Amino acid sequence: MFKKCTCCGHHWGSREEFLSDPQVKLIGYQVNFDKLDTGYFLFNHLNQRCLTTLAMQTGFFRDLYQGEEYHERLTGTLKCPGHCLHNDNLKSCPVKCDCSFVREVMQIVLKWPKGEAA
Image 1 (tube, rainbow, N blue to C red):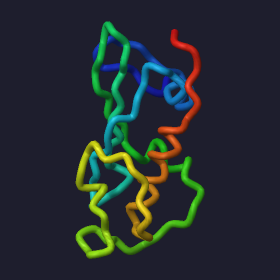
Image 2 (image 1 turned 45 degrees about the vertical axis):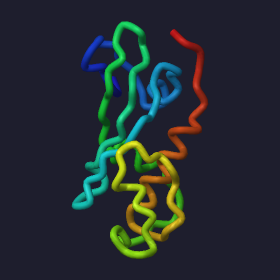
Image 3 (image 1 turned 180 degrees about the vertical axis):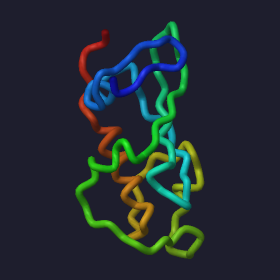
């Protein structure tokens, strides 16, 4: 089992099943600047019996990113647009920063093809 809803008990057998579910929607990102893989992606479970928010560590999705990795944090500099500082900001980031992979993973998740409603 990949994930179980903490409210209604629905479970997803794999990450692909979770991301393909039309009742699962990425709504935010809670950063952990000390260890980026332990930040949280926030998803709403849109099942009408449930409507809860699920948090999943970004590390569960890191392998979706195949691009260049950067090792300098630019948060708080003039180059940084501050996307990571706002939980509901899902935009990609043009800055070559160590946080940028998370922004790209969000774009992959947002564009993930959705299947039929269960």
